[in-house]
Length: 377
Image (tube, rainbow, N blue to C red; front, side, top):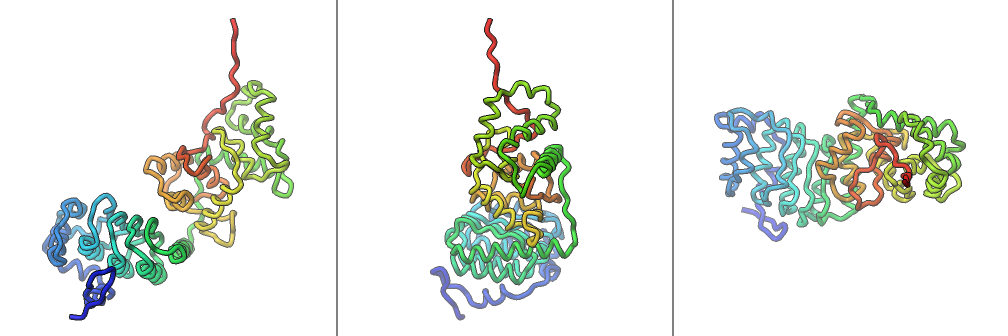
């Protein structure tokens, strides 16, 4: 039987050819019509001459015909490996509602990527594939992924951090997934859906205040004092203004070295967590916003989807947020995955004092700390 070499192993050419063919989900399901998906996984493991993994089998329903309820498979906390992933990929072909497939940190090879992409090429619902921390995936695997995201525009996110895929190829994959997201959003004709959380309304009120006093998009740095007063007024704490000394306001204005400042410098400096304005970091945040912008031609007047919040965080900081970090970010503005964010909300949400400081920064719901008064008796 003809073979070819890939990643140092002999690979059956016929297996590659058959794996690349279109498939019918219902027809594949009918092959196991008398047994449960969990039992089907065990049979597929025998077919591919590998051991069934108990934890993987537990991800599949134990009832006959229960194929349509699985929307996510996360193998990142298990070791499946390049051989064990084959029966899982075959199972994915039989799961019509599957939207997310995570096989990070599993020592996968380029051959593994080939079989995954052939499955994903014709899958009716799959949108997200996570393959990060598989260091043996290289240029060859990257070309398979590039072909996938072009041919199946339903693929909206592919995670390939800490692989050997060249940056140029990885960027091509990312850019195409962003095009796919824009096409999908435009196809359904959805409109922006902003949050109405009090913190978001606070930000919008501050933006209106800024726009009323700006000239050519900037205000004098002294406007920070009036901005701080407006911040207190919105919080209903105008009576506390007397607690802030002239020295406090002088220090506030010195936090930005320019004579005139933009909206971004204005809102970052007025945060109540001591954030310092960093023009270079703001540019990075803006770049990520524009990369995920659903209305590319609108620039910063466009919007991004909250469902991409974790992906945007990862793009900005080079690693995904922890579940707690993600939950905190969503709670700060009362967000859910159906909502959208404009630039004026996105910047404060994503702005962190330092790239390595994982403290979620946004204190609009908090009262500012004023200079304490010492009482002597």
